[in-house]
Length: 288
Image (cartoon, rainbow, N blue to C red):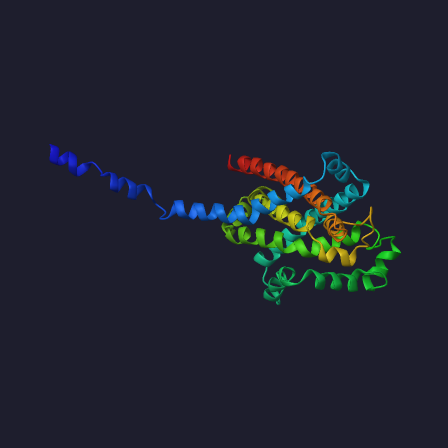
């Protein structure tokens, strides 16, 4: 009896080995926490310390300054518009690349990643050459009262260009994993193409599309190089928040620059938190 008990009861060493599925978990967790802390949390903490060098009244005055609020507006509104445009057309481009076969498809697929590799200054010069005042498309836009240097149009165009790949590359793998037989089965049951799109594919694609929107928005709101070439950079009108931060740094107003940066960070985090919450609720409804 005692022999049977000893043979069937697992030893402590066996339990320890069985519970440790991933070897070195404690070490890898410690290294990951240290890595993220040094590269992410520490710079943000030091940024907050720099901002706290000025009195609270000065911090509030900097945040509520008309120029600062206009810079936040010039960053957030075009970033949201650009992300919504990429949300729609980026998903369409991903759909075409996955579901259609045509000459030059591989070339177009490779060109999509070009904004990742291009320096932002090169992007800005290219956009100015195409959409700037007196250029081919710039002159055409002027006829309709649109100017890329005096409004949000130039900012939005630059943000669309640099953030489009984020939506395409997020949606494309999900489309590749979708089973075409589901589409065929729905069609055999009499579903129209629009019904298949809205009831079969869209619920599966929407979480990836929202993720692409989040990435596109995060990239757009922090874009600096391409925007300053195409937009007019007019204080209070087309001056974006990253440019205002650079201006404050050139004025050696480091605490004020840190305050503007923290304000932009908090606004971005709040908007992304709202979108992530909506995405989580949507995923729960789809799973039900």
